Structure formats: structure tokens, C-alpha cells
Length: 403
Image (tube, rainbow, N blue to C red; front, side, top):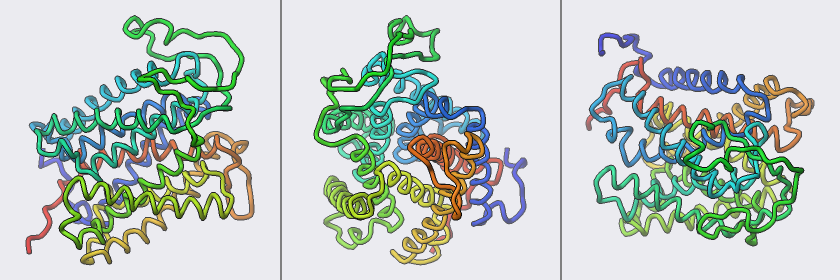
């Protein structure tokens, strides 16, 4: 299909190639968002969409952009096959998590997913990034592509199951109703998972989750844990931009599992410092701090997937990484105000308050809507359109110059 590619020079050069990719992905994300009202957007759809991210990380990194399971195809068929494959895995994961973690009777298909579900799903995503990037799929890194990816994903779920015990959801109000739009397969999981149960909102206490003895009544409030953990993955992306500097200067640290452990410690320290400054020092609500983290991730992942490490790749060593981090900060600011304005326009101004400096989110509903536009739609679109589709129908990415 090579003759179908555009031939203008901008199609293979940055930043134009990246700008084209960002416009395509944001256009798709915004178009999907407009199909929902606030309650529906914060409900089952975005929870399912975020379930795509773990398998997407595996496809993009250990499976090298789809070398498994679709290495025999060319684009766009390769990308289409990968999307169908990821949708199947994500749907199974979502139903599994809903059945064993969601606790039947705690959410509706039209109301926001309760915090337990949100925290579980996002925690799996973050743990996947550490398993794949920080630890390089250790101890499965020397296995075949399929085994390396699937076993890493299984390990991620088991590790996060253990870590989930540290979180407290006591006092969270939930509605004892559960309606999922998958009625045709309800015999597989049991009708209780799909039937509405009448009731009034109740306080979530211990023993809500029932998989592997998970009882979310640990010492750490859910919003603090979720925000802190997201801060850790943001620092992991920072080290990716820096080429793992300064650890890359020491060969003894660049082996697994030592590198993974060192990165975990460094990311923990970075998250602790920023959390202390913004939450304890500046008294910012943790979920809003997480939104700031997500916006910074917007910039860093945009540089990685859409701009292919431009402009920092023009400088050697960590200098290029710092340049990219500066550009990422600019993109984060644009994302914060741009997506906030878009969400206010789509979902209604009642979720936001107008100030002299633009829009400021009124409460968690607005923050979660903005986060979902990025987490559930934009980031997955980037990870598919760049590494898997390779910006199709633009020409394939040119090979880097040889030195």
C-alpha cells in the first residue's frame, strides 16, 4: 500500500508529523466525548477504556508495537487487528474486575463508577508501567514475546491485588445498584452482576472487594494513594525522557531487577516531595493534584508517541531530556486550560466556575471528566496511532540516520 502514502516532506519530519498525529487523536477523543453526558462519561465507558491501557503498554513495548500478535500484517490492517485484540482483552479484564473487585450492587451503567473501581483500574495501569518500563518485564524478560507480555500482565494484576489492601474506602458514599450494558453474556458471569438492585446510597465500609481476600480498609485514604501513585509514574516518565540519567552513568545499576528497584525508590522520593509541597504545603485537594500530574503526563507522552522525542533528540545526553520536559510543561498548561474549556462546553458550565483567569474546576466531577479525556481516550489513541499505526496514512517513520 506504499503508493497510497502522501509524499509532502512534512509527512516524515517533526514537528509537523507530530502535530498531525495529535490533531487526529484529539479529534477522535473529543468526538467520542461529545456522545456522552457527564454521568455516562464518568461511568462504565471510561472505566472500560482505561482497561485498554495495560494491554496497550504490553503491545507497545515488550511486543514492539505489535510484532506480536500482528507482525505479519501491514497497516492499516495491522492496526485494526491490534485494536480488536486489545478491545477483547480489555473487555475481559473489565468484566473480571467488575465481577470480583467491583462488588455487585455498587455502581450503575449511567452513574460514575465508585472510587474503588476507579482506583483499582488506574492502579493496574500504573503498576503495568512500572512492570514494563522500570523492571523491563523482569523476571520474564528472556522469554518469548507472548510469554513475556502475558506473564508480566498477570504479575501486574497479582501485585496490585496485594498493594490494594493498603487503601481505605471507609466513608465513601455509593449507590447499591448495578446495571451493565452486557446483557447478552450475563449467563457467563451470573444474572446478579447485570440486574438492577433497588436501594438508597450507603456508606462503603470494609470488605467491599471480595477477590483474593481484598478488603479495602487499609491505612491510606483512596484519594491520597491514587494521587501519590500517579505522581510516581509521572517521575518514571521523567526518567524515560532523561534516558534513565543519572542511573545510566553506572553500569552496575542498569541491570534488572536493580534498575527497577532504584527507579521505584527514586520515583517514590520524587512523588513524596511533590505531594508534600502541593497537598500538605499548598493545601491542594489530592485529586486535583492528580489532574496536574495527568496534564504533565499529557505533555511527556505526547512528546514520546506523537513527536518521537523531538525536539530533545537534537541534543545528546540528558540535555535533550530536560528540553523535552520543558516543552512537556508547556503542553501540560495548554492541555489543562484547553481540555477544561472543552469539557465545560460539552458537559455544561455547572461543573466549572468562571474566573478572571479562565476556567477553574468546581469539583471532582469536572476534574475526573478532564482526566478521563486524557487517560481513557487521548493517551490510548496516541499509543495506538504512533507505535502501532505508525501515523498511517502518512509514510512510515524514516529510519534514524546511521553514525
